[in-house]
Image 1 (cartoon, rainbow, N blue to C red):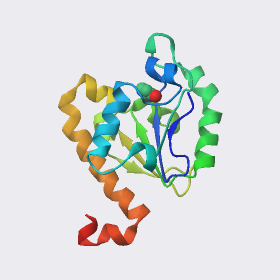
Image 2 (image 1 turned 90 degrees about the vertical axis):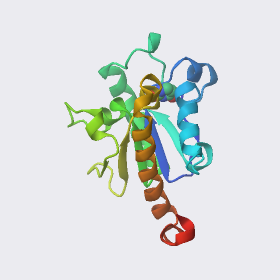
Image 3 (image 1 turned 45 degrees about the vertical axis):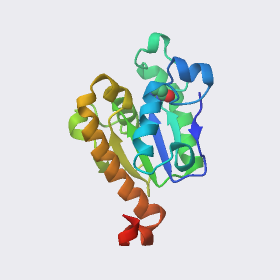
Image 4 (image 1 turned 45 degrees about the horizontal axis):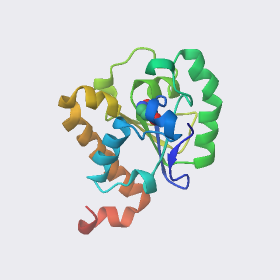
Amino acid sequence: VIDRGNPNTQVLMIGEAPGETEDLQGKAFVGRAGQLLDELMRNLGFDTIQDSLIINVVKCRPPENRQPKPEEASQCLPFLRKQIELVKPKIILLLGATALKHIVTSKKEFSMSEEAGRFFEHAEYPGIKFMVLFHPAYILRDPRKKPDMIEHLKQFISEWKEIVNPVIARSPEGT
Ligand code: URA
């Protein structure tokens, strides 16, 4: 499963690995988690198909949807790096702990409650703004985190407007 969305975009989202629905359709984030992500973003005026490209750290479905093994992630990493190089995004959204730990390999121990909503830059990818988000599958499992997720998405949207169209973002009509 390679991706879903628009490769000529400023926003790249990175998830963990395809699940069963993604495996069957050959598209990233088309199952329940992807549908929730689409809905949350659509409510904020962001069309995931037009305005972003969604990819995963691991390109094949792990059996029984288990977490990808480190060696599976490292085998897929060159493809992930190439995708970032080709798309040249201005913003990368890391969906969940797997994406964060494989992009920022120096991060060994961390808590997603502290990381989610955080923007950062990465020396290996100059000029790209990174943001950490909860994985939408986590929100499906624990809907109490949904308001936090929406708050983080709003922060992303204002950053995105600033990058895509700084003049509109700063005018009262653009808010
Ligand atoms: N979860 C992911 O991390 N990626 C998908 O493509 C689907 C579900």
